[in-house]
Length: 143
Image 1 (cartoon, rainbow, N blue to C red):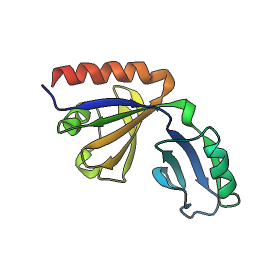
Image 2: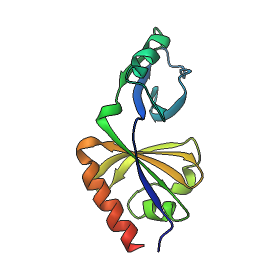
Image 3: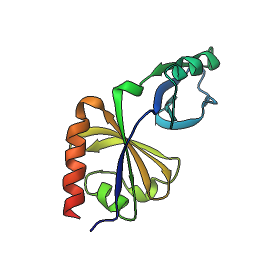
């Protein structure tokens, strides 16, 4: 049996942050998704957290709350990398803590962030969450 823990995270916050002047904003846990663009991740977020972040970064970056747009899965365990490598066309050995990849799994757009060794966060648009979960369940069963 595969050593994998799959958890759907709740009460998290994700906000897109686009730098106005090219610098990296001081905004907490940043997931780099494009040049000058990040998702800010908060493990636990109040309903107005992105608004507060936007006020703090006023004049430095534009902030838009994305929390309700995504479903966030945490995949961890000794076989997590082996599981994700089945569907993710990214060298997961290069996805070290703090690194983010924007890619696909089973034709589903995902943002993959590595917060710690052997742990991955998978963010997918809410409308594709069930399809991604089906792929994860089937792939775990096949390990």
